[in-house]
Length: 312
Image 1: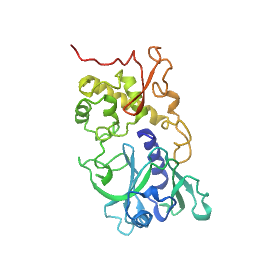
Image 2: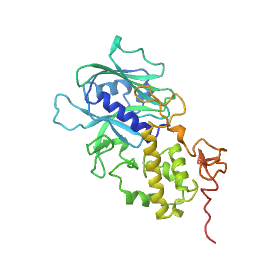
Image 3: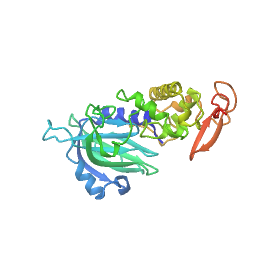
């Protein structure tokens, strides 16, 4: 599943190509991609057609585009086109529209015809092989902390469906003290806490394993048994692995994840833990372990990431 680095790579690509464009036509090719709307394809189309796509924003794994009214440019957007990529969602941007655009890909679930800020026709396709992703048109609500809603946006607002999602580790508006306290609360294993998008968003299975390996913390260590220093080191490890992934375009294991121009990510070549069960640890040389923990495939080094045991 795409995690923060992959989604941020997509956000940046979309921002460079479609920001400022006006939606002229919407074609929903599979109704399930707009399943969150009771009115389905017709409601979605009516909610976004004729609106200008403002800045492309992201919080954690969630993307959205505030919808500006071209007839009232001074008014702040009150609604957004939001998206979640699910396991295999992709956006592709093509020059031209209608007969001048490429034929839709077999996994194309929605096609938007746009008019760029410069007047050129564009086509935005949403592809989703496994169909867990979605598009949504929904109201914007004030950001609970009054800061900018997410990466790429100066607007202090988020889509209603994203309001409960925590800020991510790379967000300058993250309340680090509160996040560190939340990371150390309760009896859940620390990996489960990392995957909880209401604590710190954007972390999925891959980067949780990578950060825990880097911080030398066992994935099942209870959150309450993580010291303040360990929690701070783990947060820095999350930032380090995500920063490295962003620099390489995200993680790609197959053709499902590609950027808006069709290029795959390359971070999989540099993974230290995830997917390397049975291979030697790059730190101590002992074989890495693999097990299913909390219904997630988990990888760690039993030597570097020792099991926690309470003191007698």
